[in-house]
Image (tube, rainbow, N blue to C red):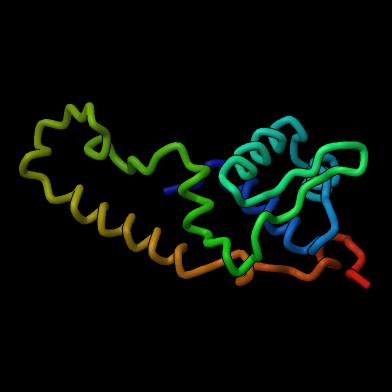
Length: 142
């Protein structure tokens, strides 16, 4: 299993916003820190804002900040909000054409593994992953 770049970038955006504390961060600043596309980050930020993880402040002095405390942002919730699906194999999809599906036990094992993956992410919050501002080249809050 592999998370999409979208989910990876979403987690990175949240980590950067968490390190900035109450200071607003911009998409340009975030793109520069990670060396990733501004255009792609705009889509990620839009999704994170709609999902309630980020708050966007419009205007000349605008930017982004966490919409809730890092302790209240579960990694599992972020991944569920940013991944398109968790169909690990064909039999997870509604249009499955596998001939052995009615008798196959693979689906059950993979479903248990997926449940364990989600459960582990649900036990971790953004606060568990936070890095100090200096790791992003930010000045600590005074």
